[in-house]
Every structure is written in C-alpha cells, then in structure tokens.
Length: 348
Image 1 (cartoon, rainbow, N blue to C red):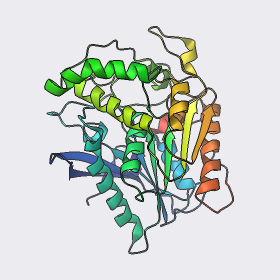
Image 2: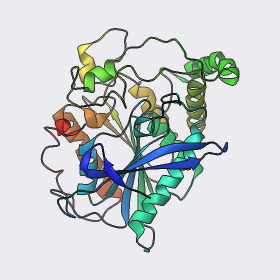
Image 3: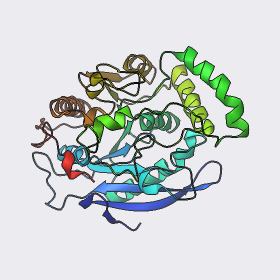
Image 4: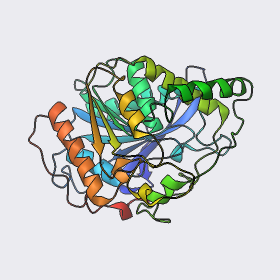
C-alpha cells in the first residue's frame, strides 16, 4: 500500500488500489483515511482505538469530502476510512462512464479489499477489532447488501438516508423494472433521458445556496448520466431489500423528517430530503434485520450530516448516542466544538 497526502489536506491520506470483481473485471477504487496531525487525541474525544474502525461509502455520483464526519468518528475513538468506489470521485477514469455499475455486487471486491487494508493498517498483529460500515444514499443500499452477503465481516451498520426503495411503493419499482430490463440487457450503457433537477446540489453547494465546498470534477452539479444498466442494478437491489436481508448486527438508520419533491425549486428543500421518499425509507428499513434503530432528523437534508448547523448537531448527537449505546463502553463526550456551526469551509 502506498499512502499519499489526500486532496482534503494534511490530515488525510489516500491509497488507490485495484480489485477484481466476480465477473473477473479489474476495477480501481481509492481508500481515504483520517490521520490527524495534531496528535492521537481528537478535540473533545478519545484517542482512536486499534480495536475500532469505520468505513464510509458515498452515494451515487458523489465522493468523500466531509471532513467534519471524519473528525466526529475520530473524536469518538475510531479510525476513520472512506472508500471512493470505482467510477466515482478519486477513482474516476477518463475512459470509464462516471457513476456506472452494471451489478451492485461489482462493488463487493473493492469493499472486501478495503476492509482487508483497514485490518492490516489498524490490527498491528493483534486480534481483529470491531468494524462499522457506514453508507449514504446508494452507498447505504450497497452497504446493506454487502453486509447481508458477508455475514460476520463487520459488527455494526450505519445508514444515512439509504436508497432502499423507489419513490412511492414496490409497484413503481416493478413497473420501472419491466420497462428498463430489456434495454439493460442488450444496451446497458444507454443513457436514459430523464429530467435533471439538481436541487440537492443547490441545497448543499457553496457555489449555490448551500455551505459545502464541492469539487465539480468529482461531484457534478447535475450528477452523472443515468444509464439503463445502472438503474436495473439499483432496482434489483431494491427487490432484495424488499424480500428481507436478515442482517444480524445492530443497524442505525438516519433519515430526514420530511421529503420535498417536485420539478421546481421550493424553499422547503433547504430543510428536507429533496431526493428520496423518507416514509418509504422508514418502512423498508424494517426489512433490513432484527435490530434496527430509526432516527428521524427534523430539518435534515438528504445527507443529514450536510444539513444546517443546528440540524446536523442533532444528527451527530443521535449518532453519538447510538455509538455509546451499542459499540463503546466509555462515557459519552460532546462532539468537538464547531459541529453545530459547521466546518463546511474546510472541505475542498
């Protein structure tokens, strides 16, 4: 492994690697880790333990950039890692379609290899410790499916607005599957001409009406083109979730308190999920496993940890409460100063 200073600055390192998927295709991914230079202790928290790590999976057409999220986990005593999956973010390649995947289990090999790299970095020859897998949106769907297919590999699962079902109901999903399946089979990379809204990007980007500094090279304002094979893969994942994943580890699901949909911008999109149907997510969350904690964050955006300062402070508090209820034995500490006001300007 060759770690290099990451685009996020001196407190982060990244390592590009390749992994062969179940189809034999070798794909490139990038593992990012938080390595605070100020010392072992993170402000207001515990020194990271060799026995606790977390791996974050971004959403579709996205990449890891949330410095505050990494600092939060480090402050709770975890080694923090994030994976830019193939065809996303740091792993984009000029000759590959951005965001594209034909089967969601094409991500399995790179997730498994990333976890092996984490175990190697953090274990130092000791008994393997606990690993928490965290996923946002499509990354939440990928994380849930991976955990279901790899029992015993991780000990905890945290999902931030996971895309577990289509808007409305399974009826909508089945109708969409019927329409897209023939095209996905014979012409999987065909671009689907659907309306481009960009409202979520508008709500988070400092170049629009948000407060987060995003790199358009890694996270395009209107997302990557939606292709038939990709949509078919996501719909198949939704079908698996609807049948029940029977995950046997503790799961935390954080979602906004409300959704805001439509073809024109609404002020409510500043404090609601403008991407997914939160009530559908709440229902589907109960099919993930036997131990599921559902937290609704009033005023939350699609990524609750990119919401307005007081709202994301609430989201971090809910996450901290769950961590200290299920994972750690230490007394709770307050999140480092700045979470409620935000550290958005420190991201690239």
